[in-house]
Picture (cartoon, rainbow, N blue to C red):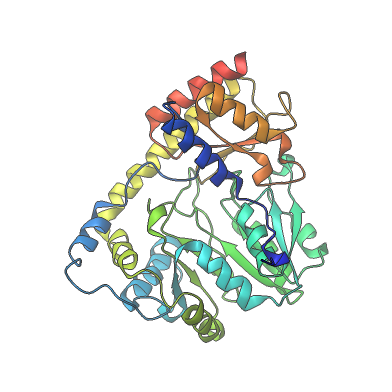
Length: 380
């Protein structure tokens, strides 16, 4: 059977690490999960109760852009979080942020065009772009600048647009208002598209993250219920697009996905209710405590070369004193220490061989135990 060249993409290594960890657990090994950005908490009680209340009713197709009530509540979120007045008609509910990436890249770029992605950065940007016959262009960031993309690098690149995440995965660093504004200008002044990945908004440990919608309406914004709302497996996200792009996205969504999962949309409505707010903020407090424990623990191990995370729930740490093959090191850590971590090669294929990403999204007890095991491993 023949294959398409566009399907020759790299694996999402963290998913391979998850499978290796699952196999180790099936074999009887006790594993602490610090590999994947998956909250250790369930969806909010209000989300689960909202879905339970509707299980006797038909859960069929919804309109392609999502339930109108959910779109309206998402628009209200922008008023509460950012002071932005948003027309709900510009909100598109998607099957997770992954579906939003597919829709955005398809709507904005033609086959063969070049799209800028910050490095280190979320691996699936590159692979989705390649699968769509687009060319990802790495835009390196640097530790000395907190791994924040510089507008000069964006302006100088030969690209048709860019996707930028703040807070960033894997570093957890965030862009201030003026920094994000300068990146948007670097694209818009040259007729390029700008996509803002805001999936980790709500997970901040100082000042809140800035939405691109506070700066411009001529952007695509992507978010999800996966992280702050603890709903990774529910596969429901959203995007906000310029008014004149709504029908374009709607046509694509109708044909690619028909609609987002109805059940997940009902749960998402519950997650946005006032009843869920205290629970979600309590989760964030746990991540903040975990962050402090990881940062302090790494310092005692002599692993001090990392940008302090402003948000999300990751630390991206330099382990060059131990290896230039982070994949092999992560395999050793799983086998010998029983801790699953993600190799930096997932996020930066050129420089990630000396980096690891540690997730602190699980319970504090798990993180304390994981850091204790890592301390013993790196002491040997």
